[in-house]
Length: 450
Ligand SMILES: C[S@@+](CC[C@H](N)C(=O)[O-])C[C@H]1O[C@@H](n2cnc3c(N)ncnc32)[C@H](O)[C@@H]1O
Ligand code: SF4
Image (cartoon, helix red, strand yellow):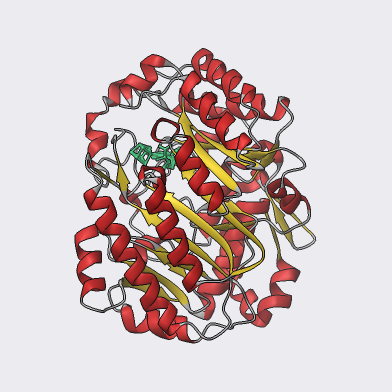
């Protein structure tokens, strides 16, 4: 699909969610808090393992481009105090869990989990395993900043059962790195990868970002050469989300140095082509994986899922978020912990669960959630499968299907009750998913769809 066609469909102007959840977190309401969280936890089914996400909202360096919920710190005292609070939260939740609930997946994200010294890594892991015994086929993944890690930390993570790691790269070009306030040499990144492989990590992800200041086709291509040399099992290729109203540090980025719409799109197209030529399978809108990696296998066998961490092989229906600002996903709905570390700490210290805003799913939400996930993972929607799962409720989407057909015309394909987005129009997935989004979203808050 060429730029004119994409422009005519509103691709370059769209500001819409990334649909890691439906409905998006922007519609969460304060009507749902600790009592709802407590009800969801106590009614968990012990036969179904849960996933656990632990948020570490601290970084030693604060990269200007970053939109993650994190805060800078030069001392470890605040980090250690935070771990104490997280351990208290874990104990509180363990007290509510029905007997026999096990943990299938554990993910530490941030911020920078590797800001934790080895002893804190061991202390936190022990508290998590005391609250949530490991299920069979348990997996533990950690987000790692290559400039904020050393052998003792990796040894501590490996001793705590880490099996997967995700490392932040973004771009290797020096002027791009300077402009985003994040300097990181290839040598430091390679040393980190080598330590992780030596520690037995069997699945390694790297994060790259397109649309950064001063990025050009040549520079991103050279960065991709370096990424390929690291031989990652998975690659995440995110479009730079410039949202300075949400992430104030992004005000340090000179918007005049950002690539324009078409240049940005060309960067994503080139990067996609390069990764596919390198033998990685494209997964959803922004991931790539070696064909033998579990993410690619899940994609091929129809088991790919999307949750707050992006594309995943995680099939657990429940995700319990621990720590400031983390989001839990229950069958009944979503729950987000207090965002600021101080507010989070205050709640836990006063003996209250940290959930402070959330959403209870209606039957219509669950239907649309399935539709959005199918489009974001597989670029298709099978109406007879929907009817099988949701019965006549699936027919309430008729007006949305008509609207998609009208807006996208031949850019999408409707055949035998299956909507599919052809491979040359996959960039449109967020736009098509957005047509089924009936939550009350104010578009100004989101990042570019391109
Ligand atoms: C928690 S951060 C990375 C972990 C670790 N702290 C590091 O810096 O290596 C997760 C990832 O989110 C992505 N990210 C952060 N801010 C972004 C933005 N504004 N637009 C697009 N991607 C972003 C980056 O690729 C980043 O590696
Ligand atoms: S990219 Fe990583 S290190 Fe940089 S501010 Fe974001 S979370 Fe912290």
